[in-house]
Amino acid sequence: MKTGFIGLGNVGGKLAGSLLRNGVDLMVHDLDADLVADFAARGAEAGDSPEAMMQRCDSVITCLPSPTASDAVLRAMLPHAGPGKTWIEMSTTDAGEVRRLGALMIQAGATAADCPVSGGCHRADTGNISIYAGCEHATFERILPLLTIMGRRVLHTGDLGSASVLKVMTNYLATANLLTLCEALTVMKAAGVDLGTAYDAIAISSGNSFVHETESQLILSGARNVNFSMDLVQKDIGLFQALAEAHDVPLEISPLVIDIMTDGQRRYGTRAQSDQIIERLEEATGLSVTAPGFPSELVDDEPEARGAEIAPRR
Image (cartoon, rainbow, N blue to C red; front, top):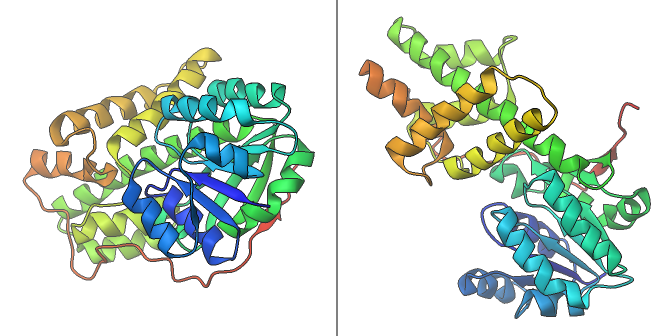
């Protein structure tokens, strides 16, 4: 299949890079012409517009920063959609929105899938990220060869929109864990515990997590650049809170998480990196929550390999 990829940002560029590196016939498009030129220099075909992408490609993947951007791109592609065409939405977006847009594609005779990713930019770079896929099972089987190039673990989550529901849940959990880790590390610093030792103590304990093994390292090195900005965090945790409200679930922790991240944006800017949230506690205590020996950049050292479907427990 000829595959189009629209949106070559922090995550999209890495996902598209995996496709290109593994020999997929790839056409790319982005508002940043330099990103497109880089892919073209490596063998991809430059796409002039979303319209051209849908005309020329069997499947078009979008990985965009907002539901508004996804809506604009889909509406541009829609007149050229039809049988044999598939739209794969890999942005983190509202489940209701992806269902609405997907329904437009399906009405045009095409198929649609929402396929958000989870696992961090460093793993997207090596095809070692996880992918959720919400779509009809026949569509899932058709796009699985592409998904297993971009991701190591691929889970079919059910109908269109189900993957987006699960993705905002995981991002909410990751954000809440980041905030508790910030508090834990700051308290350890205040108590005089060596932070390198504290890191290892968490890593070998019941308190360990993916967020600790990644973002805690960037916090302690002082780099604080996880390639995920506070505005993107706010979008995701806001979607999770809206989902809870829509189903009359009275959450207590979620509103506090939103308040803390809102304060972080007010202090450091809407585009500040999410792990800069530690600086609120540093400012409040006068402490430097850093330690020697931690990396300034995350690198996935697991060898690249073809992914596989994860069988759900149903």
